[in-house]
Amino acid sequence: MNYIELEKKLTAQIKKNRIIEIILSVLFLIILIVFWVLFEQSRVVEDIGWGPIKYQSVTYNHNFSWGILVGAVGFIPSIIVFIADLLFTKLVSFEISCDYITFYRGLIHTNLYINGELKDSIVYGYYMEATLSDRTNVNVALGKWSAHFTFSNGHQSIDI
Image (cartoon, rainbow, N blue to C red; front, side):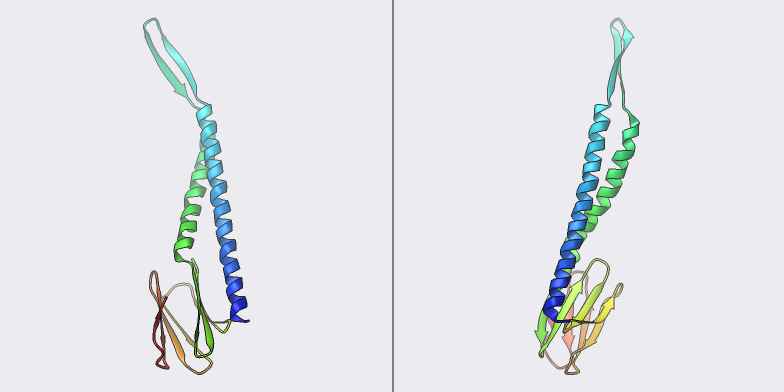
């Protein structure tokens, strides 16, 4: 696969994932708001007492609490995943010695592509390695927010 096609495919995948995350977040937020409003509208206030000694008793329909719970339990993780996706997902392509290196870091996995072909992939770890067409080794050291590329042919290191 050509690296330009790969980059378009990965960019489309990132957009699709983010749209799904936004839709889920909005859906759970709507559920939370609707059931919260229904809960508040179910309030019944009764004046209890006789003569000058009176107090109010407030009751709610607690059946709406389950909808509030579903909305909150769904909204909080979905918005956290969306924010993490915005912060951590990274797609970078660059050229070294007539080869195109594409680095993709997603929420779950990290991939290293050379000329549009997957050369290394990890789910958990911090080190990746691949070989270019001129037998140059590419080593990638992953940090929390960055990736450090080093090359065996003496090319200058790259930080992404």
